[in-house]
Length: 373
Image (cartoon, rainbow, N blue to C red; front, side):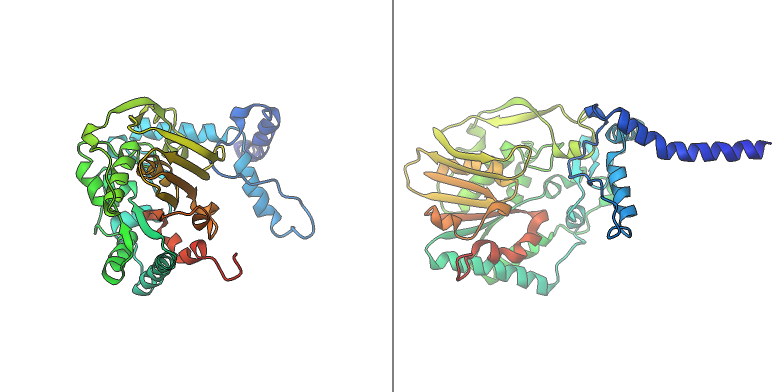
């Protein structure tokens, strides 16, 4: 008797697990909180045809997993339970470290920090040759080229990572490229890593709940870059008014689905010390894509063009004070010849350490082909 009851119980439970989520999804289709709020493109419902008969089960499983009703709420509940009960929060994208610092896990960031992710000599030479080719191209047309390497947050605040991510050697893949270029070329390559480390006890330079530097980190890095380029630096940080203006919602908190816990982080601002007019602003809503141009009242006619990743967005906010005109564009939106068409004097290629792989095809990004493509 009991065996039959247990058998039917498990049968009912099994089918309930399959059917109930679907019913919930139908019932709550107009309830926005029922949707998956992960910051990525969700799988679309596949069409069942004879051509897709082999791949349909896998594709439908991906769709089903992405659209289970209240998935984000269940994930959030699990993460909050882990945080409050065990002081542990981690998924495949981010993790919680000491003192409530959040860190990025993807793109070999932690392996890079630990010093266990290395390029071969052949890879170093190949990437370096791409950078050298771009530098030589710009030299040939009278434009100054600079490779600027923004440090990963882990390179500055790695002491707050969990013990299981112990550092074996303080040497990243970007450091390999930097060292090779310094020893074997005349490319101006700049990294503010050591300068940021010097100041981190006095100032918080990166957001705790985000992968990026804050305005203080960007200001320090901009001054470091200006100095490396032989240009006049801005006022020393100690002479700049630093104040809080609102709160910042970090991308790492969003990745962990814990913005309800990790959200009270001040948005640091620095007082402006030059009149700047912003023109031709374009920024796609809810996207890392940006394309902005600034003009300033500085007493020169120099034009700056920055091509980079999301770290460039704040970098240009302070670099713009040293140039009559400054343009910043996301690397994915740049096409060869754009900087030249703006009559730029200086081209800065900014790359954060974790994206150093993207320098492997740098010449195709910057150097126009014979047919102009």
